[in-house]
Length: 207
Image 1 (tube, rainbow, N blue to C red):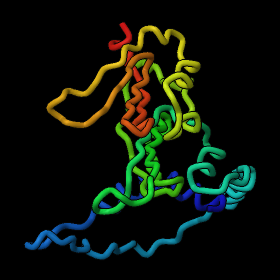
Image 2: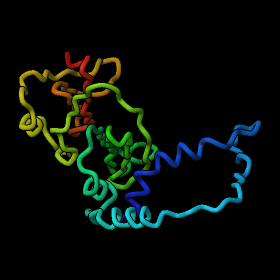
Image 3: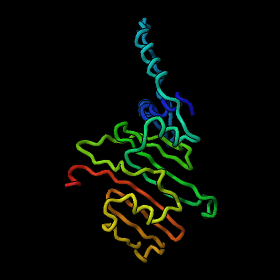
Image 4: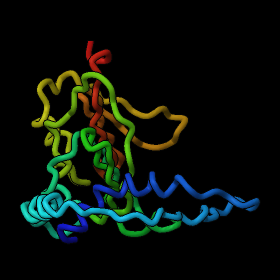
């Protein structure tokens, strides 16, 4: 993924919004194209100085670094403000290779990126959040692996004693143990770390 690819990803949410503004559905529920756009026959004066300024801004961007989409996006716009990670077996019977799914949230950009083993699978717009928000930015998604233990997570925490292990109710018949606190939720199954979520807090929730 090159520089232009990253820029297009950042604009993907806007493109999706614009794309939803003209079509409809037929009786079977299938999308139908809207009427063709007819532009008036007018002369448009191109601001060459503005075009040059935009070209300079793009040229000034660093080249994305990394071996996959996730790492390249990180190199361009930094760590996410919040994220979720889950480790799931692929295949219809859940007996396929393990897949690492991630969703990275960027609140200032109002966008979220979803990855599967580092490959981008979707880019979604987010609703804007009003007011003061406390973001869990002390956590790095790269620090959480399937093999990460609770003892390793303890080193990331200010008050690990406030985290009390809780088991999922027996009625679910799934051996899960979860810890929650300090804007972090981690869940372990009988094979290791299963799920991670960092949780933003609003000023009302913090108080």
